[in-house]
Length: 220
Image: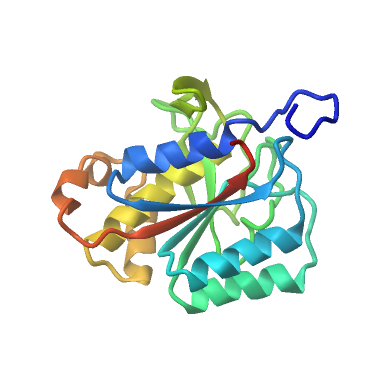
């Protein structure tokens, strides 16, 4: 209970887990962590927009947003930050949400964002918790993912927050290999979940190291 509100911190470890998944997919990527949510997973649109803008100006190649809301966010500031990232050639990836329905989540549903949902390994189906719909761009297996948590431990978590960093990591590999932003996004959508990219990190180890900003919760 880091914020002393009397409630167990549900989001504790979330940022560590997400950043760890990126590192597993793209070991040579340089991660630029930015905390915008508290340990309960709550925050403001202003802080998210500011982090996107700051990460873009700091030279990030990919921005991972394992966060969102099912409510339509009428924020010109957030839209402007996402457009700024897009105009600068930054790939923005966001979780599609865990409401188990065809309902848009934001910022994933923004036109300048790659929306990622979750599918089950070995099954041609969306995970039972994951959002879906024509607004979703790509999927990755995140029904029960093993990843790092604070205190040098590992845990299994599920959610579209775990699907997004897998795509972000693959985009980082493609960018390191010299792909342009439009090429890397197209390739990620076409090959996500396949072995070609996931096993190719060694081939990219001597290439340019991409900067990846992971905007997430305050988990220490």
